[in-house]
Length: 268
View 1 (tube, rainbow, N blue to C red):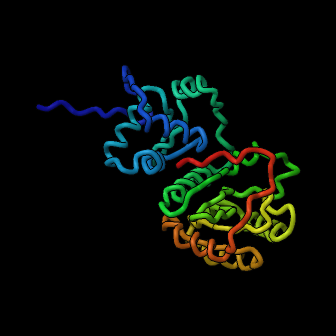
View 2: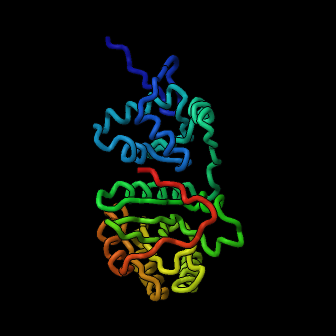
View 3: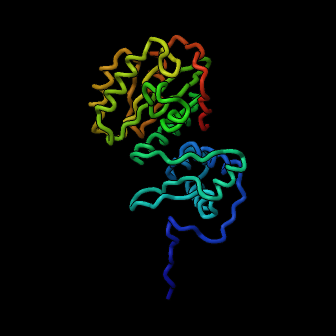
C-alpha cells in the first residue's frame, strides 16, 4: 500500500534550503521593499514575466524556505502574501536599504494598489519615470505639504511627453465620502500653483476593483470635471484608459518646479 503524501504547509519553511541569489531574485527583493506586501501573482508578474508560472512559483517558494521572504498567515482560498523575510532584511541592510513597516489599514486595498502599480509598470508603451505609493508619499513629504495623498502618484513618459497622474484604487472598502473629498481637493489644486506636488496640470486615473461601484465612481468623477480623468475596471488593462487621459493632458508638460524630496524610481 502506498504511503500517504504529506504536503508541507505553505506557511512553514522547509528546512535546509539554501539559495544563491540571482539577478532576478535581487530585483524581486528590491521591489518587495517598496511594495511592503505582495501576493504570489504580483511577484510572478513583476519579476518572472517571461517564466512559466509553475517555475516562478517554485522559485518564490525557495526564497521563502531559505528565509529571504516571509509569508503572512494564509487565508483559506487566498494566495500567499509575502513580505521581506529575516535573511532578506539582512541582505538588504548590507546594501544600506531600510525596510519600512507595513502600512495600517485594509490589506486588500494595499494589495490592490500594488497590483495596479505592477499592471501599469508592465505596459510596454508607457515608461514610469517616477512612482510613489501612498505609504512612500507620507514619508517623503510633511503633513503641511500633503494637501491630498493619492494611492499612487506617477510620472508617466510616452515618447518625449511626461504626464503626472494621481491614481486612486477603489476596492469598495472605503466610504465614498473619502473619495469625494479627495476629488474636491484635486479640483481645487488643478491649474494653479503649487498644484499637485508642483504640477499644475495633472490627471486622475481610478482603478475600480469593485464593479458594483463603477457607476457611483463615474458620477463622483464628473463632479471633478475640471480635472482630466479616466476610470477602468480591474483586472482589465489600464492601457486604453491611460492613453485617453494622456490625450486630454496634451500639450506636453515641462519639468516640475517641485524640488524637495526624491520621487524614487518605480520598479520596472
